[in-house]
Image 1 (tube, rainbow, N blue to C red):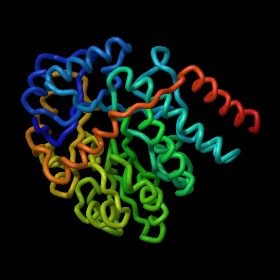
Image 2 (image 1 turned 30 degrees about the horizontal axis):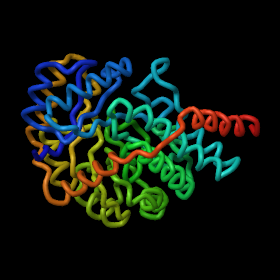
Image 3 (image 1 turned 180 degrees about the vertical axis):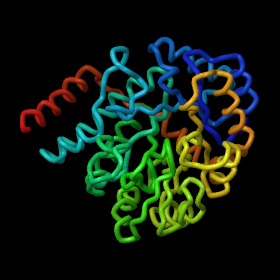
Image 4 (image 1 turned 90 degrees about the vertical axis):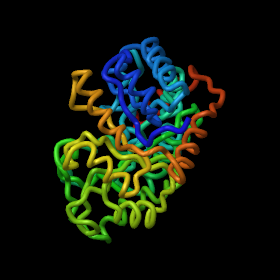
Amino acid sequence: MIPSACILSVSGPELTEAEFSLFRERQPWGVILMGRSCNSRDQVKRLVDDIWRAMERPCLIFIDQEGGRVARLKAPEWPLFPAGRAYASLYHVDPAKGREAAWLGHRLMAEELSSMGIHADCAPVVDLPVEGAHDVIGDRAFGVDPVQVAELAREALKGLAAGGVAGVVKHIPGHGRSMSDSHMELPRITEGDNELAKDFEAFARLADAPMAMTAHIAYEAYDPGVAATVSRKMIEGVIRGRIGFDGLLMTDDLGMNALGGDLSSRGVAAIAAGCDVLLHCSGFLTAPDEIVAEMREVAEVAPVLAGRSLERAQRAEAMSTQRDTFDVEAGWARFRELFHDVEAAA
């Protein structure tokens, strides 16, 4: 059964009959769980099983679990993980310990995710924030130096993969300079090639990542007024060309207000520009029937996964099937010890 080139969401903690029918009919490549769908470990496991039953296959289940303020799995049901800035602070004290913590934190996170059937995480953030930019990235970043950010993000990807979770680097080719929130409007970055080279470098160092998520941002020096998600110039010339990324490229949420037009036109434009997969989260809606209606609109314009897109999807799936042996209790003890070191040095 060949899936459609889209990732859809679920409106609540249980799969509705309408969602079951939509998934059975349209066969999205994956499903992303938002906070509204995550109440407890047992409930999430049941939801994943129901999604797989609807699809008649164990599709990839995604989640946004970076740590810090971007975490769909909340305490006290799930453990808290630090934001990217915490790893950066430890790296400044001791780079080796910073890298170790980034691996270990994401390996522990992968243990939580994979135990519930979640094998893809929309993390790590590879954006480089600049002074004066909108705080939409802020403390989510691993720092402002491309080498440091890439090193920590590399360890995060390795930690996730060791626990059977494929990572998604974001937001390629760089969201850190945006002066507005792309959830609300289209940010326009006016800096030229010399300034943006630093942003691109961080992603170029991770060009072999299994998946990446686009930035709904217009880079005026390359394609004025057109978000990278729907810009063939940005995807072919910068993301695939200059950065050299050849993994699966998914859109950021098509429901965000940075993109103009309706959902159908956004989806068509993103595929035409070179995105492999459409992502839709329905983050602004709460009514299940409205969420299903939006998901159907996206699914109806998503092509069947084929060619290079299918190969990239299969490569990402393969990375999510391997899991090493791991002493969770010892891992948590070492993780806390590492962050005690940076607190003591502060």
